[in-house]
Image (cartoon, rainbow, N blue to C red; front, side, top):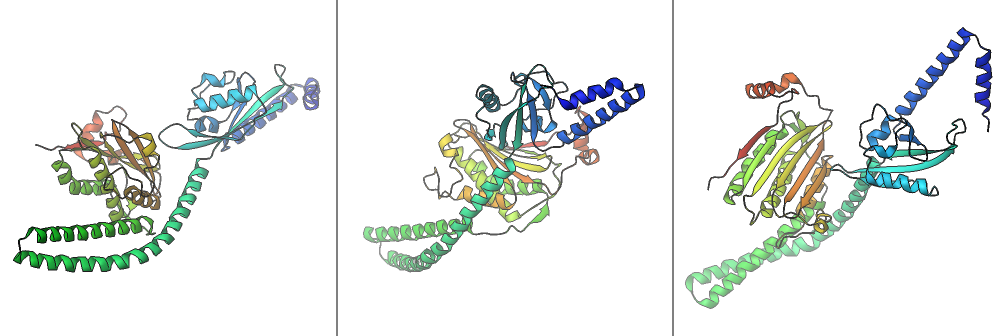
Length: 424
């Protein structure tokens, strides 16, 4: 099938003199350069492929979406020659065999950072190419932001409903609970007075029963208060401060408890993290909760260790708490952030729910990775106010870092690493 535009161009160029030919080719090159720029600034990734998956065209975004660095030479190579995710390769192969399913298809990409891609296919004819009459257009769109927004909307709606429920719960439970606590304490006090005058076994049993009643009422009160803290909206009182210094202060508070259990604390701080905005009280609550979870996971473990580190990454920073404890099963891991879900005999299942809410209110995310028998790693990821710029002058501001910098080929000082040991 002839192409009228091509035929017209060929007729025109055969009649043109040398100067006119130069003008025509110059115009073509400019238009080609213009189209290349437009294609490469698109947010969606594009592949144009032959039926054998040979690449004819690709823009910059498509390599980035697939987690790859754009190669210098890819024209003429097959897409399967590159380490694309298996799920994407299977989807493409299925479309080549059965072109009825064009999509869009949504895939969750492997890796520590959760990402979702939307992939669609179209076939089109290109008769100017003598080697084939049908090509494949593959469009790859990053829909991670939409997924996260949808998840936040769903969680916000959930917490809104829980907050409404919590208000009624507090009214219906706390008032009679306070009355019970007051009368139980009065009864406990009266029994203690009688126990001073009588050492009978029956009196001691009554006093023991009153103690249990008071303790259980106090425990129920704590459960109600934790539940209210988990669902009650509270804006963080943000202050700009040094997050490394704050983490160190929390560890100083936690260290005696770890030492009493024979647990080593190993720390590694990235001191290039700039001052950031956070609520000190809420951040302390988050860190202590995660540290105590790690401590409980180390019961019965030989050479128990808790590693705490911070790290600067482009537009965000991370706080990681890792233990070498018993780990969490895949089934439990999928439910670990649900309110009231717990694997502890005396737990309320609200600790991580409170942590999740505080982290989300700081604009952050929680990433949890765990393997049974190997331990658990919890990463708190928070955005920076602005993209971080690593300055050489700041990196060598101390003699110790300047010495380290002199021994590092790429000029980046290593994160400061210390170990808090316990001498038994």
